Image (cartoon, rainbow, N blue to C red; front, side, top):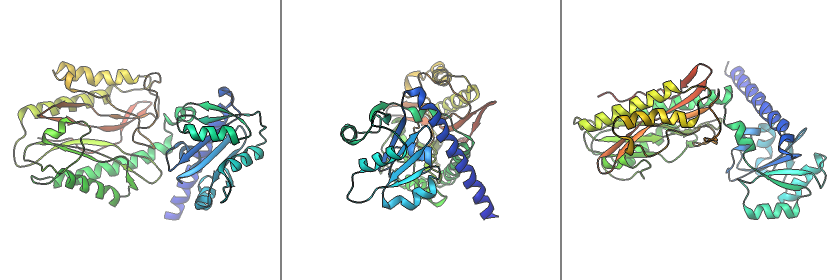
Length: 377
């Protein structure tokens, strides 16, 4: 049964990658280019994984309207051949420059010296661009966010991977919330979060875990330290994992240290933030803009008298990285958009609350991917 299930998953993955490749190929002409180079170095560009399925840290894709090549070195020959099944492998050999092999791919693709080849300006350092312009037998054209426009909206396979990641991450919170007690340090809580993420399948963290206790909870991105937790005070836990398949989770919950009743004002703040979180989720729908989504929570917090203490945006796109690409100014939400919903109130010297869920937009509204419970006083 397991072997059959694995083959179904693999088949679905290959089909999804092929669809993404074909979408990009069809779009090249509208961008005025004959091909696109997509480079990752030390894993700094997830567009490679999105388009090909290749999970190695170094490689270059050349994609034309009809053909696709993956150029990588001996560390990844086997992986590239098995993961990027829609791509012809061009092997980088020791003693030759990478640009020689890119030229090899250009020739195999039938591209001439005057062909216009796009390169991702957001990921290519100036020095590399100079080398490419000097060495490559093509006219290089800087491009911006061609692939990212596709990544904004997740397909069914991506949502399934995100759903699994969020379910595991919610389980981690449930377990760690039960462990919190006076005298623990922030770092000890963070260790429990990180250890359990790995225990239940995460490859690594999607970002450095934030544990902010007491007055530190008023710092949205506090640097977790050795402060000891005290009874009755808030503890913000903001964490997530990167899971097999390449997709991330990102959850925040505010818990309270047992042994003493929380300050009444802190309880009030918690209820305001939770109400804002739920209101924004309920309002989110296809066609809504990010500004409208943000406004739902912000207006509610403003009317409650805490508007000046909500100091960041309501959320961000989530996917192959914790902050996935999205054009917040121009693009409305569509089916498949995955966004975090994380209102917060932060009062210097007193403390703060943040509650974050991961949501996917559906044709009927939204699905909440993070099912960790909210705090009950």
